[in-house]
Amino acid sequence: MAYSHIRLRKFNTAKTYPEQKLDNDLSMSVRAANFVFLRGQVGQALDGSNVGVGNAAAQTEQAMRNVKQLLEEQDAKLADICKINIYITDPRYREAVYRVVGKWLKGVYPVSTGIVVQALARPEWVVEVDVVAVIPEKRLKAIPAPRDELQWKDTADRADKRRGAKGKTAKRSRK
Image (cartoon, rainbow, N blue to C red; front, side):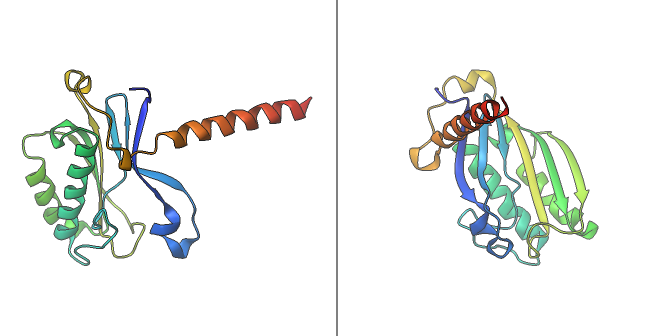
């Protein structure tokens, strides 16, 4: 594959957080070699609709559905998860959240960190699940290119070219 990083499901923060006047280009998932990094998943379906407002278990179910789908789009599996961070806004949610995560990851044995935070990026979110997966080398070689509509592989190349051009300009102007 020509690209060392496969970036799927691009989004811009202006759409996700319109009241915050942000304008950052991000991805829902990035595969770098055989590592897969996902954006933290919350009680929001991939179409942007909120799920389980006020219900930590329901939000965790949605987050784990998203994790599964995003991993599969990168040709990874839940069984490839090595590290999981779970953020909750209230320690009383821990049991419900971990019960759901445990159901989805039964037999996977990732390392896990649980963190209680004051708040997440949106007030309706009470849990966020962040994972890193590693695709075994023997499977990596057989992975086809992701579907075109999910990719935006040229964006990183354009950004690198702009950075290179700016760097050359900046160096010349110092002389």
